[in-house]
Length: 196
Ligand SMILES: [Zn+2]
Image 1: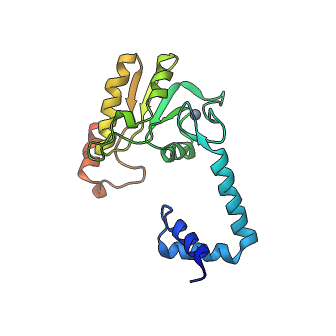
Image 2: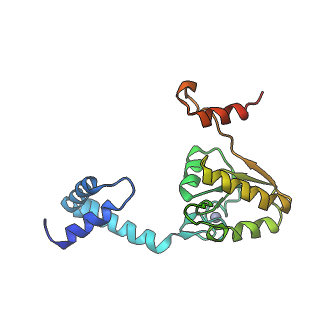
């Protein structure tokens, strides 16, 4: 259309989550039409983030500090560790502002189908932290999928012998949700997880 630079830009944008060729073309055009206001600030933000942001060596969170700002926050309760699959899950919990402990990012779940075994997960820093003592509870906040459940079972078996209380987030009826739209599995889980 207008030279290899534009094609390359559109090609790279189209690979981003939530973007297809059409939205990539629209985004590229917006950037190209406002180089000073949009494109150069974006380019420098990308370069700066690529340079500065790294996984935290303790928990796997992404931050420009290592250990990350959650691990080093003196107001956080280090005796409770919430295990999540990815940084996106950590962000979701932080947005909800419902958890004041620290996290551990696994970087995936066990998956027989995809050939992902324990050695592919970020486990060593978690086991090291537990063996240092001071952790009373590990909350497994993994997805309600087959792989999430498999991983939760495996972790429970692995962590309980270390003398730590292992709990799992409940599954059930969403807040504001109606019963008759739930799938059978969610409904069954909600019934099993009932409490007074
Ligand atoms: Zn951290």
